[in-house]
Image 1: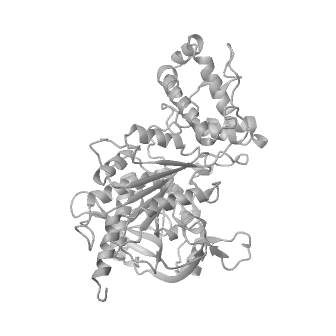
Image 2 (image 1 turned 90 degrees about the horizontal axis):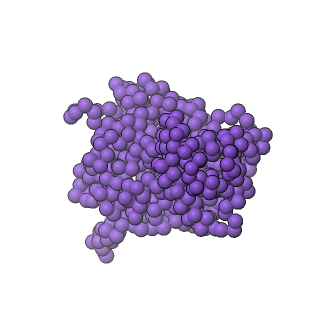
Image 3 (image 1 turned 60 degrees about the horizontal axis):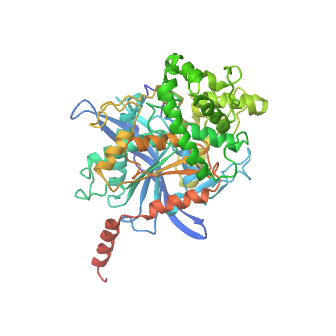
Amino acid sequence: MFSYGAGDSIYYRYVDQTPTSKTQVITVKGVAMEFTATAGHLVASRPVNGAGSRDDAAIFYTAYARDDLPKDTRPITFIFNGGPGGASADLDLNFLGPKSVDLDVLTSASTTLPLIDNPNTLLDKSDLVFVDPVGTGYSSAIFPSENVDFWGVDSDASILSDFVIKYINTNKRQYSPKYIYGVSYGGFRTPIMARLLLERSATDYAEGKDGKNILNGLVLNSPLMNRRNDCLTHSTFACDGAVPTYAMIADHHGKATARNAATSDVFLIGVRSFAAEFKKHYDGAFSGLGWGDRTGWEAFLRDNKEAPPFLDRLYQLTGLGKVFTLGDTAANNPWIENPNMNAWRFTALFGERYGPDRRKLSLNDGRDYLPPDTIDPAVDDGSDVYEYVRQYQRQFIGYQQAASYLGFNGESFDRWSYSPDQKLPSDPDRIENSIPDLAFGLQLNPQLKVLIQHGYYDLNTPFHKSELDISRSGIAAKVPVRLYSGGHGVSPFDTDGYDQLKAELGSFYDQTPAAKLARWQEAKLAEPGQ
């Protein structure tokens, strides 16, 4: 039924919007939680080419809603994976959803998935809706639209923000506190969705049209919100945002001398200061290297007394290179060739020097080495079908689907357009950059809460780059960046001390909007017998 190629779509008559639901109970920290698990499709739309013309898509979702709590004050969170091209199942099972697969007893002969209650589920704080973008999971364009029509920054965010409105109206959640949670590229689409929803106001709600409870918060897990100035994809931009990640990775492997006994927080104060020095020298001495011009860099090495301590500090922080001596060349010190080292070169050089069997580091987690000749998962464009997800849906929710669940769509990843359709006054082009959307969203709703989470060892989306981008955009006071001992998409799998992350995430949700709580209390007091 569902086809996931660029030119594919399905006919509207084949879209069944009747959901499948099943009541379940899990126990987390000794507390039993009864909830309804639901899977199904909703048809969402986006306007194109003026009034009356639109693109439609059937968006698949998996939702979990507590049955014992009032909807008006119960938060609801819409969850999106990255890629682009990733479905949401990776964020459901074993991560934020109510269940995990017990890998200790899972065997190839298992006829059912051995499921256990997930102690890290977010269901104790919010109802959850895991959403599959077009061309992933079971989501598809509806004819005459094609999947590729939604493979771009604005078309994707537009159809998914309309899905949010449709879900809220269908399930009568207009007064619920609303959140969006995005991982990796999901953290890029989330600010755009937020801006679109806030621009629409509450006028599209079936109820509560006069309300201001449109969107309450965003969680961005390992986002890269600004690709336009990312040195991993563009060699003509400074890599100052990646230097602290290099330092944390080298320290983890015991290959650097700079940290000594300092805590991570204290150590990173000094490393961030050096990153600012790095940017100063980039602007003044070696920005031309990205264009093939070595004149400024050679002059800096030859004539500037700051060159030796600058190169020595790079060595001390990263373990790469050597103590600088006059006459060093690229043959014995890679920083001589180009100090603006992006993550690709860092992973290769670090692996050559320190990796077992000369293996390179993983972009997603610099604590790990990849086997020789392995494609880095961060850039793997191979499509992947998740048959275990169909098994989980049948077993836990009762949802039956003949089509294959596409966990990752490599064609979508390859063909994604970062060129926007819409301009904003603060950034007329917005090319490869969703921070203007985040800043504009904060103007539309000054009470919007935002939390960014990053892992120390993530070379794919370095934490300090987010810190710099947020600071340079002037919204740092409203957008905290929290750091953890983890990799890309900080999760229970790779994060030491995940309890701290979960506690901080819980505190973020505990700030329930007082106005909504008051609305519910007033309604309860008005009930007969009160």
